[in-house]
Image 1: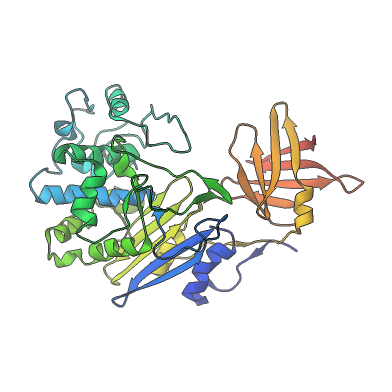
Image 2: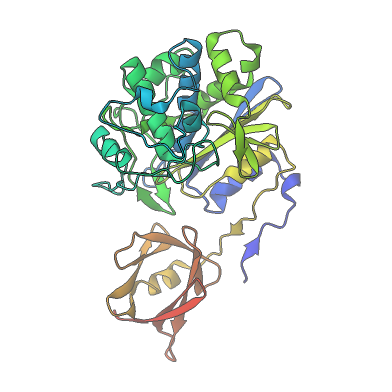
Length: 437
């Protein structure tokens, strides 16, 4: 049997099937989708929050939302601007401590607008970002780390001249907002956005440990939660967790912001206005704008991917939350407008348990480079020397592929039908490895 691709026209599939397929085809252990259309919200939930416990996901399941947090940060900035506490045209330096000196380029300074629109000239990440625990990378990046980097860096380009997505830039904006209000990020976003919208299940990851969050995964390998505390200075770039129900409250509020019935409406409306180019799209304050119509952002942490977007023209909003590091942006766009095509999914090839277990072992591809194959929860996983473990997926009885990188492996039998070697295919290279146990 060969690898099977979805052959039914995806446009003809019911919404439920399009969503459920993400679990059935092993894209993610769990997925929750919320759709606001025709003035009502519908939720779809398939799969589990944790593979070990089997607890099903629901519209109330808490997920890490990663960079969707940036739209909350820019919403806060817009609100403070309407309250007269900042101007987007202000130099960012004017809100920083005297010990932190943000460089200029060609005599041009970084403004708050540059930070909010990813046009600051700052890199994606600070070069001194070296977490004690790479599996939980942001929690220990502190003010002194930020100061050390800012004071010794040069801008790559003149502020305002070019779009470059920057976690550092948005994190710096969030840090500035906490200085203006003299409150930690979690408290600030709670008081100004979450509480007014009755978003009771949204907070900074790690700050409500009594509330269970879905387990994130890379394949079927559980991934440690990303957490943040009040001393983490990049929280505004990606620190929030939320539920589908809370995110629909946020999206509907943004969708209706043009009504301008409150100061929060006015703030959200400010964030949607195009402010510059972002590759083939436009950028507002935090939000990306596709084809002049769809306002959206996505998010990704170690074991989660998310999508949030809305169309004012269609009066429609969609949130997609998954506990996998396989993205689902295509699904979010497609649910907003079917003209956006879904990616093709590979249907899992079923391999007998005894065959899978026969592949378990260690394979030496080079001196000091060994791939260890294990069998876990009905699937194979591989781990190369000094690399994280990764799930592999069958495309035939002997060939498997990875989703985290573009690579394949093949198991080879000897004349006695015993597994004698593994072949790794990656980046055009063919690397055989002899089985050593």
